[in-house]
Image (cartoon, rainbow, N blue to C red; front, side, top):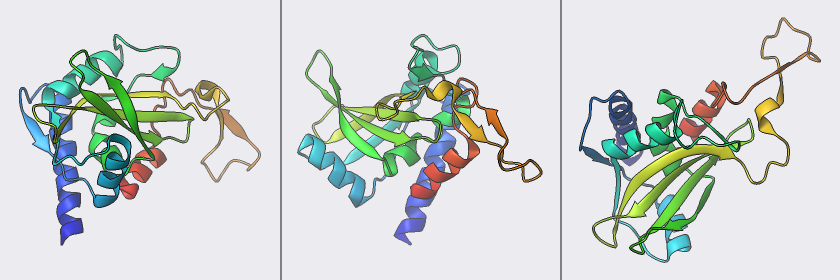
Length: 193
């Protein structure tokens, strides 16, 4: 029952984010429940627990403006996220591959980053920072970056053809600037959560 409740909560959060990306939510938030394994990872990194894990519509709009297609903060080591990619944020936060400290803002609030590695050599990062109280975290942004563990340039990584009608030794190039998160990656992110 608890697992189904958590899955329902993730789907509800994903739908909330999809509506936020479309501009249908403003100044609203949704709170997600994180599993004990993720809470332990956060405690190991920051030395304390957090009771509240909020996603705000405004933070999603901010992330899209800066890290979405046509975003203001796209660099050579990043790729723009599609609208549907933002809906993966609660799943990434639930089952991250890596949890690490982020940057500290001018007032001394710490942030934490949840990273999920993708098959194209990139990692999707969801960053949260402390808000209002020491026990409250709120999503502030999301982006995709070239994984520091990947020494090759993933933007032109060669991938096997998925079609069974093609010989197994034939390949095609995949440009990660347009193929940001494959359907396999999205399915794996959801399954891990």
